[in-house]
Length: 90
Image (cartoon, rainbow, N blue to C red; front, side, top):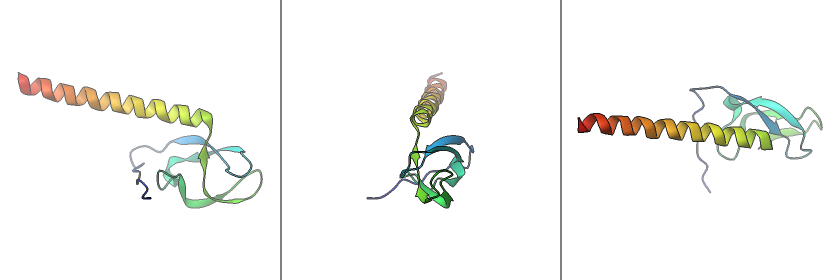
């Protein structure tokens, strides 16, 4: 199974992540996310259980925020495409 590579160069976003082991929530940065499996570029130690993390899971709040952000970006892209199409019609 291949993983999608993400380009977070445009915007560095802090978000709530969870330790897959103990479910402790902590803040991390999108710059440390390597792919769609939420594999980390640099490993972290869980602040609660101390486990070395190679990947994380998103907290429910972060999932909702990311979905809202994706939705906003999709709407903006659609609006830009419509604007380009309308200009071609003129």
